[in-house]
Length: 174
Image (cartoon, rainbow, N blue to C red; front, top):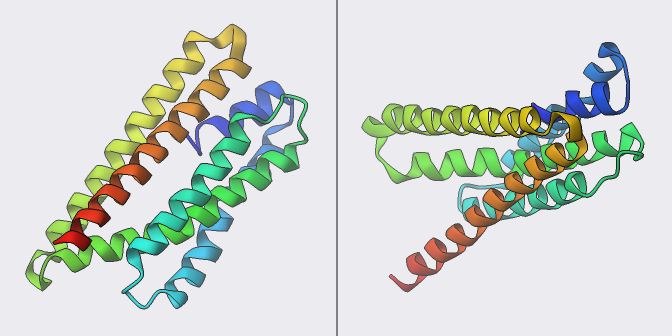
């Protein structure tokens, strides 16, 4: 949803042109690139769970901000929340990939990488399908459709946070 919804917000709701929209949607990728490098330097490989949870928490905060931003909010505020999302992704992605790779041995890493990428692609395709369906169904009330899409995304992030907390507790018990 993070790459599907902002162009609708900037172009359809705010009436901005394509060029300005292109610049404003760069918030998430810029945050992701900058903070992936920072988190990669800070994480020694033993903090994957902590960095993943931190990233998911930051993503949840950005989605909360996006979900409750009004239509009259300045475009730069939306870009700010997209950047915050990118910061969260920058902490989450490298740590989660590293954790997945640590599960198997060297022989299994290509299979684990392929599985991780497949799950990511399924999530991207599903999010795009859900978001575009909601926007299409609520095309006359696009503000509501976008807000619902952000809230659904936030809901899934919160479920992942809860599940990761449960699995981390079970690992500590074992």
